[in-house]
Amino acid sequence: MELAYRKLTADEITSALADLDGWAVEGENIARTYEFRSYPEGPAFAVKVGELAEELNHHPDILITYQKVRVAVHTHDVGGLSPYDIELARRVNALV
Image (tube, rainbow, N blue to C red; front, top):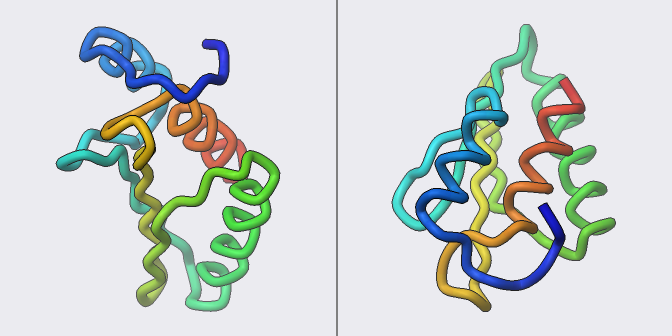
């Protein structure tokens, strides 16, 4: 999928999510919660997610709780999901 700031269709979202283990549509976002064996692993993972986000200049919401990190993303500029959201989710999954 070519990176562009355009709103994805419902079919494109469904197709992309089929290849994104653990991610699901939640309201206007796609989101996933990652679980870890210890608390320190969560913040370390969140830092790596932040670095990926900076590389793409596309920034998710990150919530750190005990042994869990929730990552949620959508593209404000298009009012929904864009290829950037899918690409960030793909890169985040590659971290684990």
